[in-house]
View 1: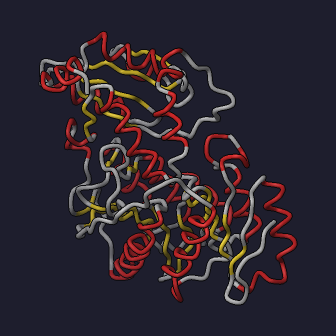
View 2: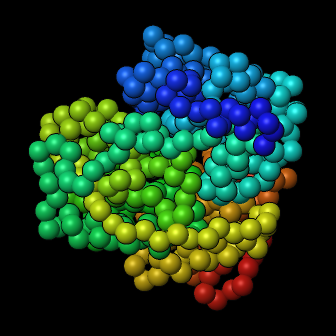
Length: 401
């Protein structure tokens, strides 16, 4: 860290502006408002295409494209920012389409490191390190707005019952089992059966595809469970829910939402409570103990992907048999949960890292032996998706597309 950078970090305090790197959703605005209420000036850099800048009024906003790294850093430096919060939903950019500036190329070694990092946790840790190397301290959203964290107990009038509690226990257990493989933070469980596991698509898209596949029969049952992954980077990757999450859960016919208390952000809390009460479902914070999990060092390889895919299948064990677990560069892109391997492969293709295709590596698929009859179709779907493929099952050691 340079002398000037160190000075900025040491000077941080209520009188020093807070920088916000803003993605989509309501959380960036809520954090800006919380900082302003405390008397702290706010400098917002909004990522173009991820959020609507007008929603931040009257806060000043600078809109930057994904590749305008220099402009982003200069905006914060010029304003005297020492602390930043990185918050809001984002999509991984297609690097073949972004518009860059000089700062992008000056930071190219760090950016390449982020790209090749593989799984989401590795990428996010490198993003934090990137800003720290430029002299900024990265704060967790709850360090600025602690009221955004879910507390123990219900949000709204309803609470979970015995049947929901059993589904919650299954969901929490499965997410904990899958944590070492850097899989998403959400799972849907109904009557002890896993209906969906979030991978690269995010919670909302997971729920959307489940709504298309599962029809609500009028009797509410089942739970969406969200919890942080042990050892994840809490400053930039806490689980989050909001009114849209509640609406999707209501449309799916689930009984409620259970989130990890003290480690889940709740956007627009009053609206969440109102939506939950209107739909007759519960939203509840659950207290649980966490254990750290070590990451995987070095650059990703196809062997890593094979090991991760096999590890996910092993972690699920007899509890759930997935037809396909698709991994690219240590990032679990999709876990099939009833929709079929072909659909899961198609979904995974939309979440390949950075839009750079094969040259950044392929994907491993761990498939159960039941897929043997469909192997040709699975391989064809993988080729169509632009993925290298390894099929693993209980009787064969490997097969390439």
